[in-house]
Image (cartoon, rainbow, N blue to C red; front, side, top):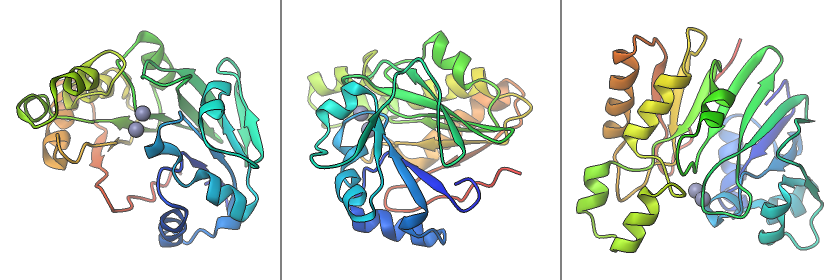
Length: 237
Ligand SMILES: [Zn+2]
Ligand SMILES: [Zn+2]
């Protein structure tokens, strides 16, 4: 949100649940000016079509993302990954990430003088991801799985390999590495997102990233999002 206007970055919940979660923060759907998608996977677009149709908001995405999302009859706005764009006085700088999707992106988001780095569904940490996220006031970083839980868990081998691969998801250790490399004195908080229900726990994610930040003498606080619960708001002054 910027003032009383805002944007949804991804819409992976049902429209009803999106409305419910917004209401927890005192936000009405008409205050939302757009949905901005990172990629076309269901856990990121589930409620986009219904929300957009119900409240008349456009859906932004890369051409690859829009082409593979079910958005019939919805106003869509394609954006190139190379150029920033603004919605609701929020500046979005998209950048490409390696994740097994058509044209996935993450964002560095500017709100006035404040910057928020938002990166979930990252296959791996590239130098451009670090460059785009470094020195943000707030970091939202994927901590998808605990390596031991994934390896000893029930997922079939091919799926374990896909998740751990360079186009899959970040482990807690990866999230720690990315946090350590991008957090600066300016960074107030690292919020861990996109935790696997099966292959992670909030405690393991928090402890791992905390350890990385402490080892690097970084002062950012770690918070963890949990399934089924809203987190925040995180206010930037
Ligand atoms: Zn995904
Ligand atoms: Zn996802």
